[in-house]
Image 1 (cartoon, one colour):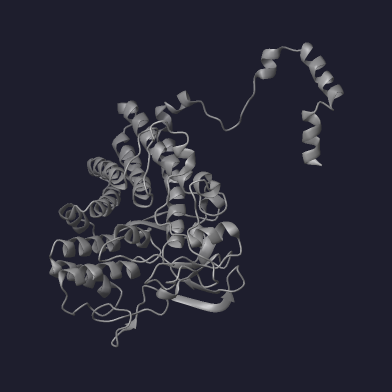
Image 2 (cartoon, rainbow, N blue to C red):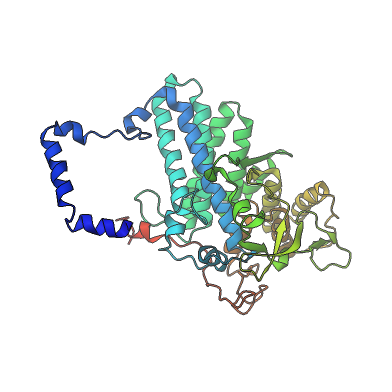
Length: 449
């Protein structure tokens, strides 16, 4: 009936009603008729109010947390950490990496929507951080703690840029030209550097550590090993910062919990290569002297996923909609230190960083002799376990080492748990790896050729 009524209006069938509306217009002031009050809409000039500074910064934090949460959840589902177990086409496509550049859920979805809206939330958070930083600069002395507020938006903005640089095949910022991942990450590095300076000046060690952890990660991506070592070594033991989540609204839910790991939707199951892991003196999963690796606790109750076929396995890292989402930490920094040291040829420093994390988890120390390449491989393996489903680290490693001696196969590739191109139900995987630049960007940005 709703569809038919729309057609009738378009075809002029409701002529008498139209006439009555026109008669009513004659008897009133048309300027008043065109004045519409839109609750919740704020004129741009109203944002140039110093008394709103804290509110503007809170909006950057909120937008970044929403976008980062979606990105981390999507990256885990896109990596080798999960196999799809969904009967929903959208979520099956995510698990099989069938996410084309014209997919509206991927490119234009929001934090409240189904699946993993990625591009719009990330670009919104990035733009907000840039825009609010400039507004704060304009406030100057009208805001006593302006440096601290600017440090916050620079630090959070850097994490949006990490996602846009690490996870996407290429990128555009605002209406700028096409950029490589390295070019985007170089922007992230500069934002983190500003955040560190501002936070230190404001006496906010927590913000400085958050930015330093982000910069260490970016410098490792850019193969600035000396810079990565310096930053990672400065992160204090015990530091951890996460994007807050809660159960007040769908926008605030932990998306990883909601979509795959809590007994809500069960759209994916922890992959076979993360089940029943053991660890010993060399960190290999098949060691005879291995003990259970308590960093990757995976179990099943025998339930099946929403495809009604795949046994659903889940882990204990995220068990509630209000669990925070990892952004930066001492644990992550130690793994940056381990890899950067190994790639610089300092295997002793790499081993020491790995063993600090193992000791904290009550696991056997890594004592076996190792060459430079063996130590690099060990650092990658330790991150696979220590940062399982956290911070999009596994997805980043799969992309960073593509085509190298340390390549990690995507599911469907030879060497993966599904080496013949099909998942456990016989459905083919896409050959996609990084996230493509959406058509909404390529079709509307005049500076992309």
